[in-house]
Image 1 (cartoon, one colour):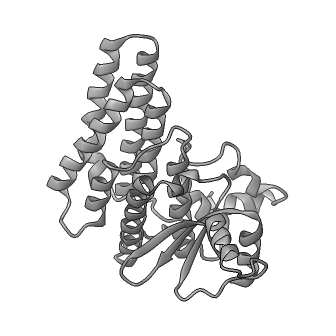
Image 2 (image 1 turned 90 degrees about the vertical axis):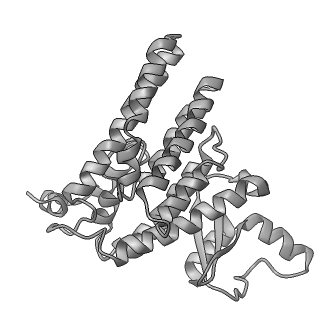
Image 3 (image 1 turned 45 degrees about the vertical axis):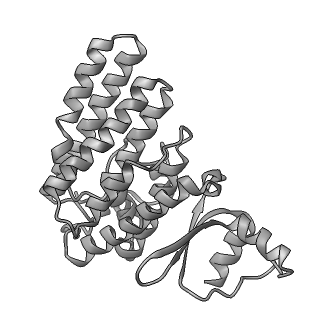
Length: 281
């Protein structure tokens, strides 16, 4: 992919994933690759010769956490299992198109998205009470949120893990030991349900296990990088010939699944009949 690569090589911070047929071997920042090549006397003006298939995931920020092996190793495993999960759901028909050509709009999957949104609403209300100093309401809402965990584990919705990571970011951003503690409790509780509800060969079971060890940063870089990789996997399989349908199918809701307002930018200068066509009358 020379044209795309040359743009990435020069201008972008990139999450670089080296994929072989059985594992993700390493996770690198392209800036580190450039420094290594410079030390070895290689030119950075042209694309290197890669010996294996490479996946390049452009990011709009400097992903400094890649330099911390204790963080990147767990994140690497999460990415690997996530790739298996996406492939499995597309290959088995778990994720299919509806009559409009939009993926993951079946009643079962929409129900899963409803539970994800409900979890977000309960945690948001809990965090509001914590900030106001209402400890009794905080713990009551946390308890209500935890009651949703079984249904959260069961869903095959593609927003399952990006949303859980996003919720972890929101809890960490409060900067209180109570909220950080609840995030840890939440990941452990979800994994306990995963062991009961999911077969041992389901990649999601391993992903719930990895969630317990992934270090969530308050800036949200881990979440954003993971979501960018999911976005990449989604468009490889669901992109087809209609970018707007694929974009709508991936996001589907607003918490916090897209940059505010960005989705509607795709409709600029489109005729009304063309804009409404992807979603039916």
